[in-house]
Image (cartoon, rainbow, N blue to C red; front, side, top):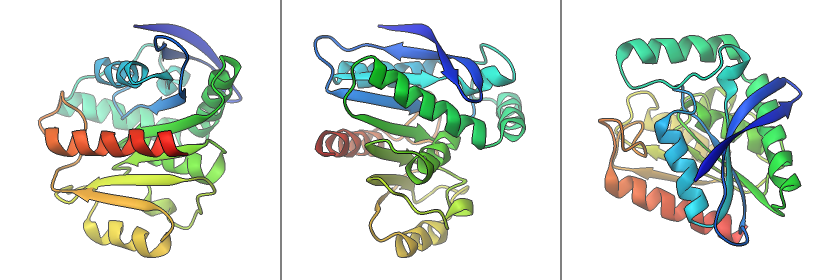
Amino acid sequence: MGEDIRLNSKAGEIGAYLATPKGTAKGGVVVIQEIFGVNHHIKAVTDKFAADGYLALAPRFFDHIKKGVELGYTPDTIAEGRKYVTELGLDKPVQDVDAAIQELKKRGAKKVAVTGYCWGGTIAWLSATRLKPDAVSAYYGGGIHGTKSEKPTVPIQMHFGDKDMHIPMTHVNELRKLHPGVQIFDYPADHGFHCDERGSWDAAASKQAMARTLEFFGNT
Protein backbone atom coordinates (compact mmCIF):
# COMPACT_ATOMS: atom_id res chain seq x y z
CA MET A 1 0.00 0.00 0.00
CA GLY A 2 2.83 2.41 0.84
CA GLU A 3 5.73 3.99 -1.01
CA ASP A 4 8.89 5.87 -0.10
CA ILE A 5 9.08 9.55 -1.03
CA ARG A 6 11.49 12.41 -0.36
CA LEU A 7 10.54 15.15 2.07
CA ASN A 8 12.12 18.60 1.98
CA SER A 9 12.34 19.97 5.52
CA LYS A 10 14.03 23.09 6.91
CA ALA A 11 16.19 20.59 8.80
CA GLY A 12 17.28 18.95 5.52
CA GLU A 13 15.95 16.41 3.03
CA ILE A 14 14.82 13.08 4.47
CA GLY A 15 12.82 10.07 3.36
CA ALA A 16 9.21 9.37 4.34
CA TYR A 17 6.77 6.49 4.01
CA LEU A 18 3.49 7.44 2.28
CA ALA A 19 0.34 5.34 2.37
CA THR A 20 -2.54 6.32 0.07
CA PRO A 21 -6.21 5.43 0.67
CA LYS A 22 -8.63 4.16 -1.93
CA GLY A 23 -10.85 6.92 -3.24
CA THR A 24 -10.91 10.47 -1.92
CA ALA A 25 -8.97 10.94 1.32
CA LYS A 26 -10.81 12.11 4.46
CA GLY A 27 -7.70 14.15 5.27
CA GLY A 28 -4.05 13.67 6.07
CA VAL A 29 -2.25 12.13 9.06
CA VAL A 30 1.41 12.52 9.96
CA VAL A 31 2.52 9.35 11.78
CA ILE A 32 5.50 9.90 14.08
CA GLN A 33 7.87 7.05 14.83
CA GLU A 34 9.06 5.63 18.13
CA ILE A 35 12.80 5.45 18.83
CA PHE A 36 13.01 2.49 16.43
CA GLY A 37 12.72 4.43 13.18
CA VAL A 38 10.10 3.99 10.48
CA ASN A 39 10.17 0.23 10.93
CA HIS A 40 7.71 -2.54 10.06
CA HIS A 41 5.31 -1.51 12.83
CA ILE A 42 5.21 2.20 11.97
CA LYS A 43 4.64 1.34 8.32
CA ALA A 44 1.76 -0.93 9.41
CA VAL A 45 0.25 1.89 11.50
CA THR A 46 0.58 4.25 8.53
CA ASP A 47 -1.09 1.67 6.28
CA LYS A 48 -3.91 1.31 8.81
CA PHE A 49 -4.65 5.05 8.69
CA ALA A 50 -4.75 4.77 4.88
CA ALA A 51 -7.16 1.84 5.17
CA ASP A 52 -9.32 4.10 7.35
CA GLY A 53 -9.39 6.68 4.57
CA TYR A 54 -6.48 8.99 5.35
CA LEU A 55 -3.47 10.00 3.30
CA ALA A 56 -0.80 9.04 5.83
CA LEU A 57 2.88 9.98 5.94
CA ALA A 58 5.64 8.82 8.31
CA PRO A 59 8.81 10.99 8.16
CA ARG A 60 12.13 9.20 8.59
CA PHE A 61 13.70 11.52 11.19
CA PHE A 62 16.79 9.38 11.64
CA ASP A 63 17.80 10.01 8.01
CA HIS A 64 19.43 13.19 9.35
CA ILE A 65 21.93 10.91 11.07
CA LYS A 66 21.81 7.58 9.25
CA LYS A 67 19.61 6.56 6.33
CA GLY A 68 17.23 3.61 6.45
CA VAL A 69 17.17 2.97 10.20
CA GLU A 70 14.56 0.29 10.99
CA LEU A 71 15.12 -1.28 14.40
CA GLY A 72 13.58 -4.18 16.30
CA TYR A 73 12.82 -4.40 20.01
CA THR A 74 15.90 -5.66 21.87
CA PRO A 75 18.07 -4.03 24.54
CA ASP A 76 20.73 -3.31 21.90
CA THR A 77 18.31 -1.66 19.47
CA ILE A 78 16.71 0.35 22.30
CA ALA A 79 20.18 1.68 23.13
CA GLU A 80 20.83 2.43 19.45
CA GLY A 81 17.51 4.25 19.07
CA ARG A 82 18.11 6.33 22.18
CA LYS A 83 21.50 7.34 20.82
CA TYR A 84 19.90 8.66 17.62
CA VAL A 85 17.21 10.50 19.59
CA THR A 86 19.77 12.19 21.82
CA GLU A 87 21.88 13.23 18.84
CA LEU A 88 18.88 14.49 16.86
CA GLY A 89 17.22 16.62 19.54
CA LEU A 90 13.69 18.00 19.24
CA ASP A 91 13.87 20.95 16.85
CA LYS A 92 14.70 19.02 13.67
CA PRO A 93 11.88 16.47 14.09
CA VAL A 94 9.38 19.28 14.69
CA GLN A 95 10.59 20.95 11.47
CA ASP A 96 10.19 17.60 9.70
CA VAL A 97 6.61 17.30 10.95
CA ASP A 98 5.88 20.78 9.61
CA ALA A 99 7.26 19.71 6.23
CA ALA A 100 5.13 16.54 6.35
CA ILE A 101 1.99 18.59 7.08
CA GLN A 102 2.72 20.83 4.09
CA GLU A 103 3.46 17.80 1.87
CA LEU A 104 0.09 16.25 2.69
CA LYS A 105 -1.65 19.55 1.95
CA LYS A 106 0.15 19.74 -1.41
CA ARG A 107 -1.22 16.27 -2.14
CA GLY A 108 -4.77 17.44 -1.55
CA ALA A 109 -5.43 16.92 2.17
CA LYS A 110 -7.52 19.87 3.37
CA LYS A 111 -7.05 18.97 7.03
CA VAL A 112 -3.98 17.29 8.50
CA ALA A 113 -3.73 15.62 11.90
CA VAL A 114 -0.63 14.38 13.72
CA THR A 115 -0.16 11.25 15.82
CA GLY A 116 2.94 9.80 17.46
CA TYR A 117 4.08 7.02 19.76
CA CYS A 118 6.65 6.91 22.58
CA TRP A 119 9.31 9.49 21.60
CA GLY A 120 6.98 10.30 18.73
CA GLY A 121 4.29 11.09 21.29
CA THR A 122 6.50 13.86 22.61
CA ILE A 123 7.09 15.19 19.08
CA ALA A 124 3.32 15.05 18.48
CA TRP A 125 2.78 17.12 21.65
CA LEU A 126 5.32 19.68 20.46
CA SER A 127 3.54 19.77 17.11
CA ALA A 128 0.45 20.90 19.01
CA THR A 129 2.37 23.63 20.86
CA ARG A 130 4.69 24.82 18.07
CA LEU A 131 2.90 24.03 14.78
CA LYS A 132 -0.64 24.29 13.40
CA PRO A 133 -2.00 20.87 12.50
CA ASP A 134 -5.76 20.46 12.71
CA ALA A 135 -5.62 17.88 15.53
CA VAL A 136 -3.07 15.84 17.48
CA SER A 137 -3.27 12.44 19.20
CA ALA A 138 -0.14 11.70 21.28
CA TYR A 139 0.59 8.27 22.73
CA TYR A 140 2.73 7.86 25.89
CA GLY A 141 5.26 10.58 25.16
CA GLY A 142 7.90 10.38 27.88
CA GLY A 143 9.17 13.90 27.19
CA ILE A 144 5.79 15.63 27.43
CA HIS A 145 6.12 16.26 31.17
CA GLY A 146 9.51 17.87 30.61
CA THR A 147 7.92 20.39 28.23
CA LYS A 148 4.70 20.70 30.23
CA SER A 149 4.90 24.51 30.35
CA GLU A 150 4.31 24.74 26.59
CA LYS A 151 0.69 25.39 25.67
CA PRO A 152 -1.10 23.57 22.87
CA THR A 153 -2.86 25.83 20.37
CA VAL A 154 -4.76 23.09 18.50
CA PRO A 155 -7.15 20.30 19.61
CA ILE A 156 -5.15 17.51 21.24
CA GLN A 157 -5.74 14.26 23.06
CA MET A 158 -3.20 12.08 24.87
CA HIS A 159 -3.07 8.40 25.78
CA PHE A 160 -1.09 6.85 28.64
CA GLY A 161 -0.81 3.45 30.31
CA ASP A 162 -1.24 3.43 34.06
CA LYS A 163 1.31 0.60 34.36
CA ASP A 164 3.95 2.60 32.45
CA MET A 165 7.12 2.65 34.55
CA HIS A 166 8.58 5.37 32.31
CA ILE A 167 5.69 7.81 32.79
CA PRO A 168 4.28 7.82 36.34
CA MET A 169 0.62 8.65 36.80
CA THR A 170 1.67 11.58 38.99
CA HIS A 171 3.07 13.17 35.80
CA VAL A 172 -0.10 12.35 33.86
CA ASN A 173 -2.31 13.87 36.55
CA GLU A 174 -0.10 16.94 36.66
CA LEU A 175 -0.65 17.38 32.93
CA ARG A 176 -4.39 17.10 33.51
CA LYS A 177 -4.27 19.96 36.00
CA LEU A 178 -2.00 22.14 33.86
CA HIS A 179 -3.96 21.56 30.64
CA PRO A 180 -7.65 21.07 31.47
CA GLY A 181 -8.60 21.63 27.82
CA VAL A 182 -6.64 18.58 26.67
CA GLN A 183 -8.33 15.18 26.48
CA ILE A 184 -6.14 12.83 28.52
CA PHE A 185 -6.99 9.12 28.70
CA ASP A 186 -5.26 6.43 30.70
CA TYR A 187 -5.56 2.68 30.21
CA PRO A 188 -4.74 -0.37 32.36
CA ALA A 189 -1.67 -1.01 30.20
CA ASP A 190 2.10 -0.62 29.97
CA HIS A 191 4.31 1.65 27.86
CA GLY A 192 4.09 0.86 24.15
CA PHE A 193 0.63 -0.71 24.45
CA HIS A 194 -0.27 0.22 20.86
CA CYS A 195 2.60 -1.73 19.29
CA ASP A 196 1.53 -5.29 18.47
CA GLU A 197 5.17 -6.28 17.91
CA ARG A 198 6.19 -5.59 21.51
CA GLY A 199 5.56 -7.64 24.62
CA SER A 200 3.77 -4.67 26.18
CA TRP A 201 1.06 -4.68 23.49
CA ASP A 202 -2.43 -4.53 24.96
CA ALA A 203 -5.11 -5.36 22.40
CA ALA A 204 -8.03 -3.79 24.29
CA ALA A 205 -6.21 -0.56 25.12
CA SER A 206 -4.83 -0.28 21.61
CA LYS A 207 -8.26 -0.77 20.04
CA GLN A 208 -9.93 1.77 22.33
CA ALA A 209 -7.18 4.38 21.86
CA MET A 210 -7.29 4.00 18.08
CA ALA A 211 -11.08 4.33 18.06
CA ARG A 212 -10.79 7.52 20.10
CA THR A 213 -8.08 8.84 17.79
CA LEU A 214 -10.12 8.22 14.64
CA GLU A 215 -13.24 9.77 16.17
CA PHE A 216 -11.21 12.79 17.31
CA PHE A 217 -9.64 13.28 13.88
CA GLY A 218 -13.02 12.89 12.22
CA ASN A 219 -14.61 15.56 14.40
CA THR A 220 -11.87 18.22 14.19
